[in-house]
Length: 214
Image (cartoon, rainbow, N blue to C red; front, side, top):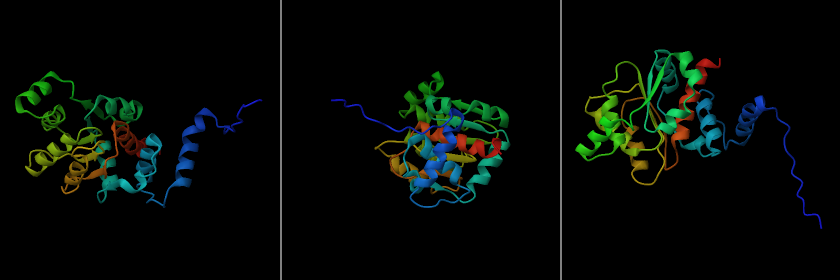
């Protein structure tokens, strides 16, 4: 007996796959989302295939305008993982004349973490505090980075122009995200346990594309 299964595939040209994906996402959203926020929400869903981001992503008031201004002012984007760093689109970054950095593998960060008894992610925040100019901090893995950002913001030692808080996990993840949302710093945060380095990079890319793809 022939047990071959017949599967119908969409005939989509390679150049049209992303656009078709976005069409499908929009058609399957659980509810309409604000058009101003849609690029970020749809990109997060696109990279994760998780429609829950339509509800879990939280935006501070006016954050999209803040993000675009920061990027146009040649921001430094700091990530908490090299995976997120690699996921940030280099072409868009170059067009905006921004730069991206991850300090996690730096020897001085490892030494500071060991000396102070906290994580490299927290030590990376301390190092980033000395960066001059517009700063976006994108966290996709380490809640300790968000906690350290919260501490330094509250102490007046650091003020990023934007915090992207989407770490994934089970220990202190939910609490760290909620802490960031109590500060007066602009934020994009994924409430709950979900997130990841891929989502952090996707949000950065979505923000850049609202400028470079117009």
